[in-house]
Structures are given as structure tokens and as C-alpha cells.
Length: 440
Image (cartoon, rainbow, N blue to C red; front, side):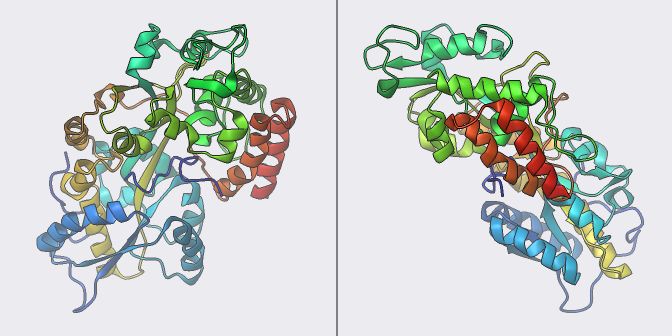
């Protein structure tokens, strides 16, 4: 299985004022459960669970409905999901990602959110909401979403007069603004740059760019920037296209030409680029908003860093956007269904999501909380306002049944390009065939 970062699913990450009343879910009559009954809600993040506690206390005070919040670790969460689907023992509300949505939807157990929430979806971020539309229905209430972002070491980049806003990756050109800036940033212990006589890759004090086989931060956005896709509309993997081959070979060549950390090193340690940047030894880090908290904690004011759109390709900048949504399970009982609807409505509102935003756990699904999220980051010394507005042209996360498994099968093969054991022309079609074989 891919890592959380590869799928843009960080467990650390994560105006409808008030809960409101759901259309068709109670009207003017209060929703009640039998004495002693509670609603169950499941998430995979301890940080999110802690934030939700305050929100759910307010929900209980407002509705009289109590919620038992349970947390399963990442691996256990997805191991348990198919078991609960098969046994029809899912909790009333649970967090969902796009890679597993199709499986849950196919069970016929999900509640269609559009029928429950009425027009409320208009207040949610469209980039997140649209990921949960299937067969003309809406099957999740977006809680948080994430996007790819370029992080710049202001001191290092400023010293070479670099402009992180004007970076282009063009595999068809002899060089481009990304490679030029990465070369200027990369320096060994004698002050030499790649291409200089005597340059020592092993003695690099500063690395240029974080080119490595990260699905979310690099592979998805770079392939999309070349005009390619990871999957087609039916869910089949398509990254082995000419555009995909060009994008992956470009990234691997940056590492081979010492404009990025060693490909073998980053394959062996997926966090290497993050650690190098936090240590002031990498000029440009392309990652996701899910890593902002880890960066802020690790850097701790040691140097200034700024956020920018991801590196563009000939088709523009294409950040990968992923969203975590709350989905509801149909209990087959009118009273309990109404109670589940009340909880979903609350989680779609400002007060339901406010603790997530104020604790900087992902970008808020509700647009009216964007200011609270930005304000919380501003207090931490990070300007995230540059990420406004939400991107329109994006790379998509995994979608469809067993798509996460398909990507997990493909990534070790793609990594061979970075270790130098294969070319992208050989590895990408092979990885695509293996990934599609997983889909059946």
C-alpha cells in the first residue's frame, strides 16, 4: 500500500452556522434515539479526534444525541473497513478517502448526502466536494482537504535571485527555470555547482530541488503538468503515457544530475527531502499542505520559508487535491437515519468543523472557515493566504475500487527509474500493466 503522503492522506492533517435541520430528517420534531443508544463515529487521526471532542459536545448539547468517537490507526482502519462492510457493522458516520469510496459505495450501505443536506453543499469547497460525487449523487461531507505546494527556503533562494513563482519543468528543452534554479542552489563544500570542474556530489552542502518518486507531491502534479493523467475516467491507470514517461524521467534525471538528492537515497528514505529542507540543506521542497505542521515544528524559526504553487509544466501548475469526507451509513431505521442525518449536517457546518480549522488539521471543507484556518497559521508565523483561491485545474487522487492497491503495486517499479535500475520508458508501461492487473 502507498504511504499516507503518497496518497496525500496525512493522519496528522486533518456559512452553515450551527447544525441546522436536515430536509426530510425530522422537520420541527426533535430527533431521538432509544434510551442508552448513541451514534458511533470513526476516524483514523488522534489529533482530529481530540479536536472533534469539543465540537461533538456542542452537538450533543444542541440535539440531545450522544456520539461515541472511536479512533483506529491508519493500517487498522483500512483492514477493518472491508470486514465491517461485509458484516454490515459499519459505524454510523466514518471518515473516508477517495481511494476507498468506491468499495464502500458499491456495498449499497452509504447515505446519499445530497438528499440529506439539501442545498448545504454550496458552502463546501467544490474542489473537495466534487471528489465525492458518484453516479449523480454526493456521498460524503468534506471535512478537510489538502493540496500540493512548493516550499521555498527564502534565504537560499533569495541569495541566487531565484523566483519560486516562475518555475517551469519542460522535459523537451535543454534546460528550464526549475533546473537553472536548482543548479544555482546546489553547492558543494568548495562552493562549486553541478557542471563546474571538480564538483563533488558527496560533499553537497545544499541541494536544489526535491525530485523523488512521491506520488502526491511530485509524480501526480508533474505528469498532469505535462498533460498526462494517473487514471482515466473509468479508473484505469494511464500514467504510462508519453507524458508520464517524460515527467518521471525528468525527475529522475534531476537526481542523476545532482540537482536533487540521490534517487537511491530518497527511495530508501521517503522523508529525506523533508528532513533536508527542515535542516536548511534544501532550497526547494515540493510537498503538500499535510506536511506544514511537521515543517513548522522542525524549522522552529531557524529560517524564513514561503509557500508557492507547485512547479508548472507546459500545461500549467497542477496541484494534486485530496479530501477527507464524513460518510453516513444507512441503518435501515427511520429514527436512527434521522439522527445520522443530524450528525452529518452538524459536521458540514461551521461549528462542526471549526475545531479542525483552528487546530490547523487540513484546509477546511467549509469555505467560511478559511479565515480561521489562515489566522491560526498566521499566529504560528506561516502565511498560507497565498494558497487562495482553491485551484481549479488539478491532478486527481486515486479513484475507484482497489485504486490504492494499484498505485501501491506501481510505485516500487517506478522507483527503479530513480535508483537507475530502469528507464522510465521501460518502467512506466510495466508499472501501469501491473497496476491495472490489480484492478482485474
